[in-house]
Image: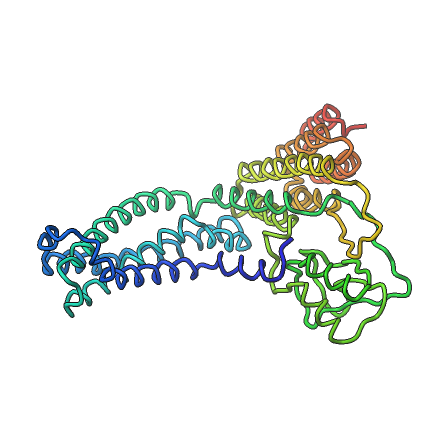
Length: 419
């Protein structure tokens, strides 16, 4: 998990406005830097480019790139709306953060500003003969960059609003969050601190990040212990505390401790692993709705969830081999790990509910659960067995055709879920 400053900086860096602003600033800086480079230009090159040549090329670029930038923005908005309707609105933030889309729009805006400022500078006769040559060289490089960006952007547009692309982006985000999540059930039972007090937020919201290093530093300074009760993804309010403190502290210290928890109106993909699984299950549930009727997408989602959880087990195995399995006796901050049963439920239970009347969905769910159990019996065995029994019971209660029920029974027995 990130410190409070790192969390805020990362949020700014992922914002859709940051790259265009940075590219625009870079374009302006480059235009104004051109006169400074005059002394480095060979004398014999100074008369190669006239002011009229620069102005003509830059005018063409300025008039066309604004239209290209507006077109790119409108296309991106349409793609986001398409993804929201075909997948789920919760996937939209990940699509907005798409680096290829942001780079394309930023390049067009930066190139437009460069061209506009170049035209203004040329009209005002701000450039010497050497400066005009440098400006023309930069313009040629800009044209090459714009053409290359346009080609990549066209390729990106072919996938941007597709439900498969949304699934891939959510899967990648969930995988990254699981890779950095606390070890599963490292501290299964948080200290109760019988004589302690609960720490409540000033305003309700979803916990988006816990600045563990800042929290540890404060706990060391105050000489208290802190049991985090609301890790990322949990909703904290006046009835659900952020943490349990081993002893009471004054109001200023409480405020400082609360500041270690970033709260917001939405859950965050980057520090909340189970949110990615929840969003994937939403995509599958929408695909199984009568209005869409696309079981193939639901099957795709099930396999994506299986991949995420399989890689998570490999990550846990590697991390547990590299670290001390027992918490340090001097540990002052306790953070609960992700419960395996909760992770499985977030990903598979909604699909089991919405696809209970479809044998193909039930068989795929049982197959995915069986695969996870086979990959790591110690981690998934008990939770998979319980969820598999629930999936099978739901399906048998929803399927009316006897032939389908027999097929489900045979599949369940083959995968180790039958009686």
